[in-house]
Image (cartoon, rainbow, N blue to C red; front, side, top):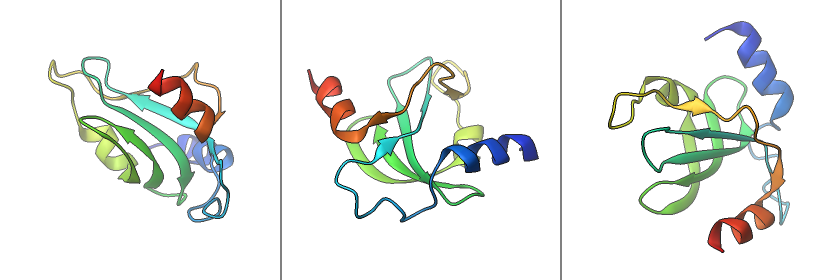
Length: 101
């Protein structure tokens, strides 16, 4: 993991637990498997490895996931998880409404 990449993540994401009192936090980043239907939306970051956000796989759930795991997991065709470079931050409520339509 490059120092530059971690620095970028730290600058884009608020620290863990800093948005827990917000009713509609911003989803800042999106990671996805190009060869399956799993998606990870990051809301907060501990600055090292741990994200809090929305994970959509077999079900949608809020929880914690690790950058190190995203870097090591491969999809069913062996493709790595990618970060969506064209994703723009969106509120959690707005995203949930769009995703459910």
